[in-house]
Length: 450
Ligand code: ADP
Image (cartoon, rainbow, N blue to C red):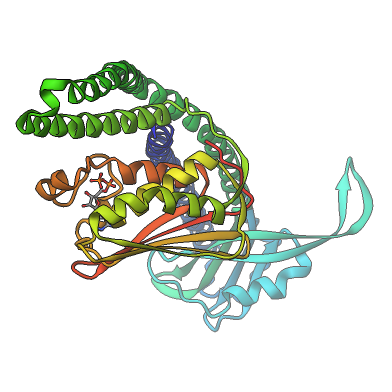
């Protein structure tokens, strides 16, 4: 139970830490993305302004009112990371320009031709560039054609001469390095996230362990107390029972009906208490994992017959008939004593909660790798609201009535525990006034375990 809570706490703590971590990383990445791109944006705008001014000044100096005929040799326009620049005339025809990879001129020019940028409009494009050869240390080295994607940021600006529009200038800036930076940044941040995820889980585990420490030690002390107290109570109770037997047989008392009645009541209460104490002991030991569980080869049919036989007097006393339906033999692996106890608990309840003249039956079946036990009665049934809670300790749907039939609300908790240690499942189908069916399904071959 504590392990489960600790696991839950660990998951909660680490998800919280991870959430903050991821949030932090997203914010850092986004901020860097925005800042770097904006910086590139600004640089490109500056470059465009500067080169537009150079051309305008040149036109003014040479007193030309058109760009036609202007050659690249007359003006050198270059900027940091400038991938290309093109100047077009009023009709959008190429006038001059240059690019880092000359064979790509037509492809690059197509990107900008006819584009009339709005104010502050900047475009981003990515193009594939194939390098056939590379220059290393001044020598040209033949290489496999290598293709790279280049990210371009493109700006365009009109050129005026004496307030008259004479053409456009387009500049493409290579911002691949920025994207490469983002790429690496992402890898580093994701690796850090993975690393910190491990650290977060470890820290969360330690924190939850620390938080659970005092609770689990208090619970262990309480469990030990219940176990010890139950154990210590058993001896005086059995002494009381044998003393009552002895008193009942004493001469004077034997003849006194009132004394006999009192002693009978006393005996039944002591028996009830003995039952309660032994149930408490079972659960206390189950909690501390201190119950020895065996893995026996059990023939369920044989055990069911024995259980029914032992319960017959009790059923008869309540006016309930007991029936059984099972295959000739049903061999399974499990803890013989616990499986018998499970049948006793369910059948005893079926008898207890059936009216005089009722019927209770036990049905055993096998299907594939599982066996199923159904205990059916035609008794008072269980209200749907109570059904999910009847396996809780000390839960009784009707406390006053249950007192008269002698229950104390631990039977089904023990039944559930027995089913759990056999890796099975228990459920109930019931309708008030019509009866109940308890269904247990357990793997045939699985040995009992923790
Ligand atoms: P108890 O000792 O009170 O029978 P259990 O844990 O065995 O305790 O059962 C819990 C409660 O579930 C009972 O008090 C009763 O209200 C209800 N219950 C269990 N079995 C049956 C049944 N066969 N028919 C009707 N009610 C049942």
